[in-house]
Image (cartoon, rainbow, N blue to C red; front, side, top):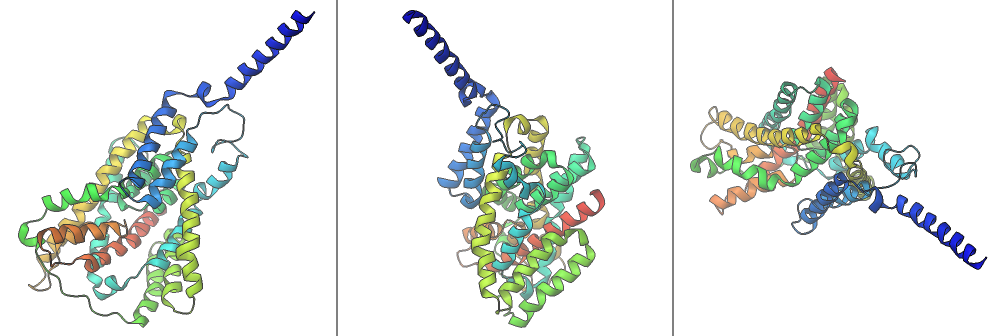
Length: 389
């Protein structure tokens, strides 16, 4: 009898252990999960050790780890499982809630003085958006649908929230790949842009010194977000969620009477939304939905769009200089700043310029096209959404 009890107890324990093993990540792991976990670790390494956009890459990298922990279906813990906590948090990405809030914070942090002091720099920001439409054309040529091509093309704007917003509307199934691609290349602008800038400019052009920007009055700063909103959104109403919040955040900053609101938008709210956006976007890269041939093509097109955008900005300045008198010419090294990776792209203009002339400070000049790129990418997203949505 005792032996029978032991045997029954042992059998019961073995069944429990087998059942427990079936629920573990070790049992449910697939090679795709391991690949994505390695990618997540690379993101964390770049963010922590190399300090490449740590505010973005650390949340996204850890989110990739979270999203690729293997689990037994039906536990309601996965980001794509209805009723799970992560699914609720991911709602803000799927429905495009987080990007406008990010733009609110960006507006509250952005000083448009460099652009207002030299409005022609806005043209550089517009020219850099050619990367978006160049990638769009290439994506169409590779067989993507119009909506998918538009969502992929926006990577060239170097604006993660805009890429998420547009892809959530046009190509939800590619949103994870597009978002990770956009943020990855934003973090790597220091690696991507300098070779293109040096290749397309001569030593003489790199040494061009620009006139100091003129002082901008507070009245100009207050009027700008109002006029900016009306002009851009009357032209492209579909860009209202992003542009409206961008200019709203900016008037909170510049009005001088809503400092508490501006500080909240630029700090606490921005930090909270960045955390939620980064983690959920990272977690959306479950291997089963992320590791596809289309995702690989998205990454390739994303890299190409960054090269095109950088080259377009630099080449546009070179062309524009043909019509400017000596003393008014623009240093082509600020052409890279037309992408909206603020302020990293402008810092690259400064660093490359100082490499050739220790007294040539381009940062303030580069901030003009850099902030213009933020507006330009949102306008481009509105255009694409208008005829593809």
